[in-house]
Length: 467
Image (spheres, rainbow, N blue to C red):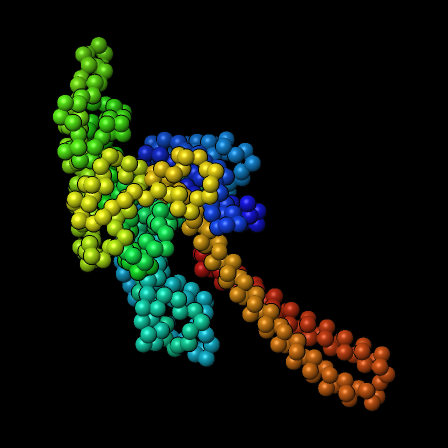
């Protein structure tokens, strides 16, 4: 295992469960799972925290279970997934005109371009969660994916901006902070799930991630390596459970158990003569439930969810010819039997189940390969992406500073040698050596003072960007 890599923790605050997973990348770039804990979620509905006290208890329980799996863990910061009805998105365009046109386009230019988008006018009750660049434009050149190193006067980009309700975000922050943790970043859940179940070929081919959670179904559409669209559909596994409870007159726990054990997403696949026996309440006679009727209830709700998926795909012009990678189903609700067939029938697009084992190293527990943990695994991968980007930026700055130092040292040495020729006439060899050393030390001190200032400025800019 790569001991230099940090341990990153993903915290998935869902409607039915709260999961905490700690991981670290090994020397092969695969994710080693170091701790795992989960707990039932009682304070969250449709992806939103409605009872902070219950949510805090559930988070603490999940953390305790995570510590129990690895007592050596120390968890202070977490990446947290966010979803819910309040999530919205919009497309914007931004440009900057560079003052130093002779220099290459740098990460600093891109950061300025992105930070400017946080000034986008949105409703007063909302807050920008994330700004995601799509294609860049440099002068008259369009559809550029990586402009750093290029030359140009005007740099622009199309952006996908994700917003959420301020109060809903505050409730998540309070719940996590009162659990004794600090949020490093909030990540839209379908983007985290996409990171866990997709490979590079999927990004290029064009895919739609459909993450069927307990309270919501989250959608993210990618095409040619670019995030095209995100949406939150206000139905999930809890709605199916409630439909079964109300339609068949059973308890919610019984409805959930029937859905998981005997549920079919396609009624035609259920047997006509199959029945489930439910114990009667308080001496009442047992109740027999038709598996066929159960399947009809499930299919009705799942078809409605898939109709929403089709609606969003049509809204952005992503018909089935463009989604060569098809639809990737993930989340706890994706485990329903024959859901792939229903999805393909409703959308006309090929479908498959996305398992979060694309980036996992060997040796993890089998439970973590279930689709319901895709978001949590993806949050860790998002954390590593941030860490690697920050490290790359520091290395680039170090190279620039080091190159600048070498150039200044060479220039200073040349000046010293020229002056030394004049000293030779009036000083001894030892005096000349002493003068050379003093000159070099003075030059080095001047440069190091300047380098120290640059490094302080660099970290100050990074902290300001976070604020």
